[in-house]
Image (cartoon, rainbow, N blue to C red; front, top):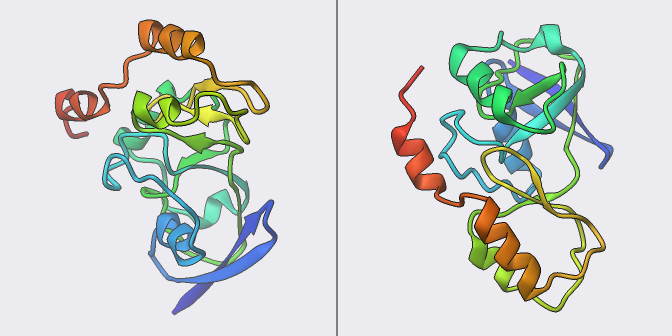
Length: 161
């Protein structure tokens, strides 16, 4: 049996099989979801806000809770789309503004341009470059000094929940 999920702010509805995860909903709409951890609930790249229907989703598990605790933009209605499974109708999901990057090279490729949207860290969701800011080499060096992009090591050092 299928359930309907609404995506905001793009105002689109889509269907998902009962017990299907929200990540499949995002992918079905061709949304560019980085999936840095491979859908294991260990990064911020599929972080969403559930505006309605939290009770229509599976409960948050330990791994998801641990990951949500490190996401800087986490709110009480935050979920990881890869972990949240749809049990019934009435789910409205809002996509956080911004684009996740998975390496410093992703930002380096944008030097000399203004960020068209917030550029976000793939594990913490921290805003690395604000929308509209000019991306410069000095900004890149500061990010390199203060931010770990060793995402793969983070995942390999994290134990399963």
